[in-house]
Image (cartoon, rainbow, N blue to C red; front, side, top):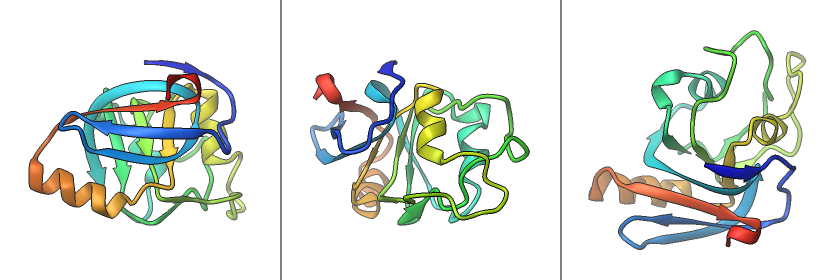
Length: 146
């Protein structure tokens, strides 16, 4: 994974599946490129635990819940000290965290840890495609990598 750890707001991004299917959106988290196995999470809460769970190492997690990031992140809800996913895909990221427990925003944390993500993707269509076609590799590209 290569990335530029800077805030990605407004930067065009593209997600490309190994079967050639393409989804366009905006960078979320770090700007750059990343690769991994596409998996999806149907949880409406617990995204911080998913991101910091070592079992997701080298995987690009697609969140099926349409709105992600509204509780922000904090240092108490982590499974480990770092984010393990190689990429992150969301439909509609929260503009700012609304939980009193939040210590920082999710996009800020992804960028700080160099995790390349994409927002504005129809994650339900992507999930259906993965469920029907089976496991496959994926790349996310943003900034100069697009």
